[in-house]
Image 1 (tube, helix red, strand yellow):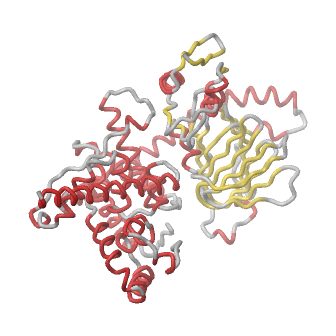
Image 2 (cartoon, rainbow over the protein chains, first blue to last red; image 1 turned 90 degrees about the horizontal axis):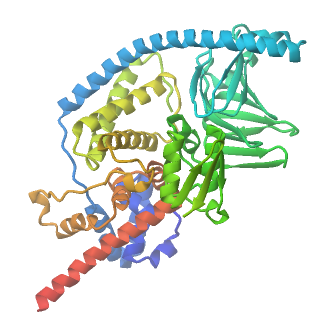
Image 3 (cartoon, chains in turn orange, cyan; image 1 turned 120 degrees about the horizontal axis):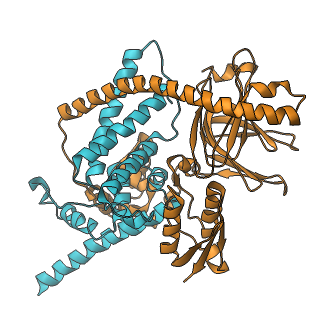
Length: 350
Length: 185
């Protein structure tokens, strides 16, 4: 667990000890193992005891003021929390109700349109009639609740299609375009014994995801697919690729079918689902990355006139609640003028 | 792990109550560094716990709960502080509420000179540096957890922590030198 050997610790100064995470753990949250290491180190090298004692005393004296709270005060809040849970349950039932009606109305309209189009295009596919499609406009985010309890947050300019009939012994399937955060409901808590019909499948352009009980974010934009897993486990199968990829929490897989470029690495999953709170959390994004995201989600073409600032990075999260605010931030942070034309937004250095 | 046994419902209820009460204290203390508005802190705690409760109901497994709880609380509280301050959100770090340290020191601590000096020293750090030190040394979070809460990389966390600790120690040495000069004068 610790990075340094006893020999290396021998030449440590007081400041080195203070900065060392493994040494800090001895003071903050020691375990028997950590304590054992340092006690035996001190025994073997008594000449270091003075340095270590000073470093230890220093860290112990780093302190913050603590507010003493009355147990009764905390208990009152706990009771309040319990009653909030209770009323939350009631609200949820009502919410499901209105959601179902809303869905019925939008479904009725969409089904009519879909039936018309699909009966012309795919006249051989009978199942089309039974499918439900929910889509979002630019700048819109929708929550979709599937019949099995799975919830989907659909990002702007995206759509999800699923069968109206989820009952019976067949796997749950959805078709997705754009970006969504999917939180899958378990049918079976015993993950080792999942029946074929208990599976959950997501189809996208050139890939299939088989869910093994999980929540994750899929982003298909600009010919590139990115899958980020937050919890659970999923099996990702790419078109033209024989062996599936198994993903674990924190994994990100990005795939560009045209270039056959496949990358699997680690990330902070929350950064990818920040859009659910309308909060874009990219790790030090460049201006180009921000404007790409705005284009994808608000449907306006954005042109950065000055090549040089395209790759300049912004530090920290940027609020994307609406396009105007985002542009205002860009103009302040990058010191640029913003010109809005009918379909194009121009960004240029002052 | 968030596997809930049906047989020992009472047990898991008790476990949940303990979780609530433990984090209530932690959140309250953490929140007080950013605001004096107790209502905002209380509301934020309830909001975060509704989310935690919902996740438990759905048996959603939270990876690294400690950092998840802290960053949720921080996010909710900051939102409330921003909303009421009416300032234009620049999405920038500069508009994050200030992490402040007060200098109240109780009598028993006065004799510990280093303790007092370090308290003073904390004031010379930036808000972010203070927060990082607080999360690591007061709440006992790991470097990875601190990174998640502050929404920065682990590498950047190492840097912030080292710089803050060095600054604190410099302050200490400086005050020691002053003392020697004072005594020898």
